[in-house]
Amino acid sequence: MIPFSGHVAHITSWHNHGSLGLFASGGTPATAIWPTANKVFYFPFRLTSPVVIVKAFWVNGTTVGDTLDIGIFTSDGAKLISSGNVSQGSVSTVTSFDLTDTCLGAGLYYGGLGLVAATGHIFRQDIGNLVHQRCLGWAEMVNGLSANVFVNPAVYATITARYAPMFGFTARTTI
Amino acid sequence: MNPIIPSLPHIHPWSFESLGHYLCSSGCTTFQAIVSAVYPAANQIIYVPFQVYSPLLATAVWWCNGATVGGNADVGIYTADGTKVVSLGSTLQGTANAHKFSTITNTLLSEGLWYMAFWLDSGTPKTMLRGVGSTNLAGMSMACGGVLEENAGSLPAVATFVSSTSNYIPLFGISTRSFM
Image (cartoon, rainbow over all chains, first blue to last red; front, side):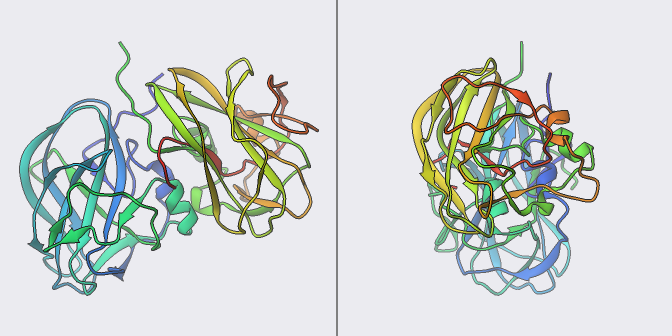
């Protein structure tokens, strides 16, 4: 029996059979200020077959103006692909960035998102409480950005902020 | 040939590898509905099945404490026929409303059916986080494949599975990571 097919169209931080599943859903998405400058949040996801990732996207909240880095890491923290430092974009919209097309084989990965300053808002899900969010496998790195881009390799650590930002990756050219 | 399906860092009763499908599709509970509740009975062991689709190295076990603590707990892993392969050993429950995460002897689990087991030595004030809801059913754990064992002083070398009439499913699990 195969319990899930990996992903459908997008790999998201909030609901994906290959990621955190039904158990991360249900919380009401809401705009919220990024907790700490240079903090990066990582969510685990798994692929059951190779996928070519072409875009990354994130959901901006009601205040923007920050810059960010978004990308994908191996399970042990090595950066595979990222946007580099880019502008957050427009208020309350899904914003995407064209990544260098990258083929990921079956395996466990982490998606990462970090904001340079703690001024921008991202839509995030409220997953019950901090304990629940930890159970789902979220991780963070307090100073996961350095000089506005990801620290590589990432050093995953226990999350200390109840904040599950909504972002993801896709093999489609259209979000 | 089966596809490679790696596990996420933590496997718990709400995981896809475990009872997650059953619990969510039954309308029994959602992850957000997990709350603090009194453990059903002292020395009860709750066994929860899970499937491993590609080999994984279990390095730690964990559980989530509810609002009241003070007991001793243990988490172990059993084969499909009830033989214990590894356990933490009796350990103080830890801090209220927080998870307790402890490393175990690294244990490689091959593809197949396994059980994770949770034991608590007290059933009165000590609480764990569990799933509840208005549509929750007595025996929901049994309907989903969970079994239990009563009045066990610790996690036994060989489990004696009996039908579960409980709707209590603690939030606990195994991990392939070094932190929660």
